[in-house]
Each structure stands twice: as C-alpha cells, then as structure tokens.
Image (cartoon, rainbow, N blue to C red):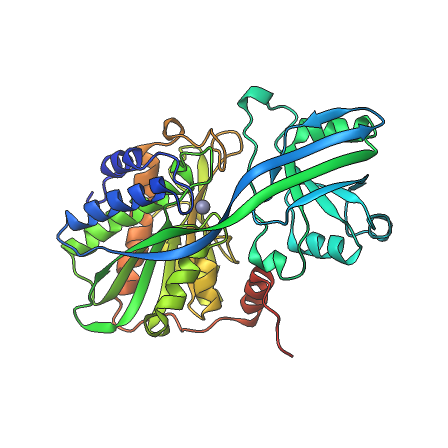
Length: 417
Ligand SMILES: [Zn+2]
C-alpha cells in the first residue's frame, strides 16, 4: 500500500500543537509542511495574507441586581469597546415575535452559537449588547476552556454590537437566579496578523492547463492541537502528493494547505482572490477536513452536480469502502471554491459523538489512529487519481442552482433578482 498511515500519523504528531490563525505557531506548522514537500523534490510556496484580530485588554460582566457577582467572560474580538449597564434579557429564540419585541435597549443573552440572522435581528430590535455561551453542563469547570470568538466583518457590516462569551454553567445561573441588571465592559484594540497558505504544483503530463485542487486547512482553534480538525486532512493530502510525485498525473494538480480556516475560511478566500486565472482553469476542488477517528464514518459532501455524488457512491462500492455521499455544502474551504464556480468535494470522517472532539482541548492525537488515517487517505487518493487521469474529464464546471443558493446563504451573498 503506497499510502502510509503510519507516516501520516508521524507527520500529524509533528504538527500537533496549537496553531491559531496568524500566530507564530501557525507559521511554524507551515514550515514543517514546506520542509516535507521539499523533501519530495517539489517546490513549496508560502503565500502571506492578512487577517483581522484583536488584543483584548479587558472583558467584564457583572450582575448588579438582584445579586452581585462577576462572571468569567471573553470579549468577542473586533467588537466595539463598551462600558454599559443595562437590563438582561434572555432571548431563547431571538427570532420569535416576543423575543424581538423584548430585546430593545437590553443586553441580550442568546443560545449557543451566534448566527448571522440572530445577530441581525438583535440589531434591528435595538439590543445594546449580547452574551453567548458555550459548553455542556456536564463539563467540569477546570476542564473547560472559554473560547474567544470574533465578530467577523460580514457581521459588522450590519452594525456593531459589543458582545461577550461565557460558560454554560454561568449562563444557567444568570437565568435561574433571574439576573436583572448587569454591567458590561470591553476594552480591546484591533490588530492585523499575517497568516499563510502553502501550496505545491504537480504539472499535468498531457493536459497541464486543466487543474484539480486538493486542499486542507492546517490551522487550529485556541486550546486545541487540532489534529482531528484538521491536521489529519493536512497529512492526508501530503500522502496523496507523494503518490502524484511517484505517478505524474495527466492534468495539473495543485496541493493547498490553507491557514486561518477556523476564523472564517480566510486562507481559501485569500487564495482564490490571488489566483483568479488559475481558479478559472480549475475543474474540481477536493477538500479533506476532519479525519483519523477510529470510531466514526466517512462522508463526502458534494457541492456540485448530482452526477458527481453518484460517481463517488459507485466508486465507494467498487472499492468496498463504506462512505455516505450527498450533495451539500460544508463549512470549510470547499465553499469559497464552490462560490467561484468550481465543483467541490469535501471528504470528512466524522467521529462518533464522544469518540472524537473538535474545537477543544480534547482534540488530541491519542484519539486518532494511523489505520483510520490510511483508510480515508487511500480512498481520497483513489478518487483523486482516477479523476485526474480520466481520458475525458467527467465533471462539468457548473454549479446547480440549489447549491448556488446554499453557498450564497452560507457566505451571506445577496442573490440578484
Ligand atoms: Zn476544520
């Protein structure tokens, strides 16, 4: 077997440290990937791009009435500075008429992850600040890391609200103890960091002008060594690169390791913006994001024509590889490519709940295995090798309307009617 899970696992171990968007550690990981590429006799290119970030000096949330208590919070990065006191309102849905009517002038506690529609509704309803929470009531406090979230530019263009994030047990207490009046303070300064994409090219032997891109993001979130998400995808495409070095493909294959995926797909967006001519010649994007969990299942999300779903389903049967394929978008670097009109496939091995963890301190290499990496890598390699070497390229460079709609919704792009 030319794809070697053990070798992939070893490389994964070497990049298995926290490597957040724009950090020195992210750059260090990019260097390890470059060294690996260059050891194969292939040129590796590292391309910088800018990302927004903030240095938070202060984030305070205090309940003043009917009891007094300060809670541990993090500021939403890039939100405005604030010093304000106000009434707390728990908007359990934030989209119901009752919640909408009650948010005016309030500091609003919302459930779970803050989605753009909720944020827009808070702005329209006159909320003055917001509080999000994370985690499970079953988590022990000492095992919980409080995430730093970022108010991204696509949120801020609708208006700028100060926000903080807290642990679920504290949010629970706010509601149970009927916290009424709260004080919120945020002081931070916005900064620009430099993140990097790494890429390598294997020119096609017969049709070099047609390009197929293989991608994986190599950055992690804070508190996470990001091996499952997504050091695994990074080492899987490295294995496939080795295969293409050994067996030069008919068409050109680009290998991209994207930085800053975790803060809003910034690496792939920057890559597409920087290489428009190349993207125009790209017929397919193959993305790998999360893999290596021994307990789990392999899934392929196809943002492209239905025929590609069938193609991958048939191939899985032919290879005796258990895989569920479906037409959908995926929250990863495949989506900006799909938005540029490139049919995209994301391969993911979703770990079973409780057996693999993302975006937390439990995303560690002990929960992954070389065999699992190898199995996913082998199938993605079979698919990539087959399609890159077809006599006639079978995938049309078109994006069905239902996928255009989903991509636009996801990226908050207005459909022009
Ligand atoms: Zn990921």
